Length: 278
Image 1: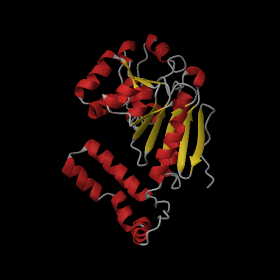
Image 2: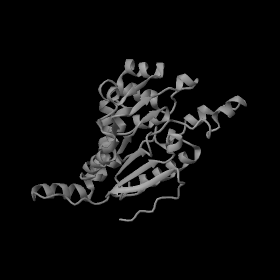
Image 3: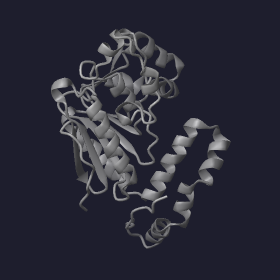
């Protein structure tokens, strides 16, 4: 199927490596894929489009070259100059509904896979923490070094890391600004699913994406919605909100549930359809 993503600059590469799969590559390798206002706008436009495109069911996010994302580009972003001149609007910027890279706080109903090559610092790590599945290269490193710059990991990283790793491990990483390895992120901090050789990073991310799109998109997106609700509410309230949500109604009144059950009884692979728009 041919897709028509919105216009974007050369700072973002948009590709489709498998059926129903979108691959977004941050494309500023000479600047360690640091986030610029232009790249932020590109991500915002393409992710908004992706969220509404029924034929795309999973997105993979990675970085060109040897680094995933070094955080905000402090030169291009003009942050230092604004602070020195007395301008301060960080709290308003941090309140952006979708966060750093239009992804660190985005409540996306479709699964997001991070393929982390090399380093991930600051906002880059905050993006990773908001992804559903994280594949890291063996050489990947992660840091939230904001306190070393006199600023704060204010794009969603603090509550998310605390929920994933627990207070004490989150405090260790956030209050020291230390850099951790992929092995530590996996074994101690718990936000990396799989570690692979760098050459296998994108193939493994695509393999994971394919394993997701092999399932009913209605059921997958409804399940993702349930996970998001569980971050906000207690067990009983999140269950009730999920059970009576439009996402659940779409599952139980849609075509894919009929196809899935029929395919099971007929001992064949189901032929899923794009989910109806909510």
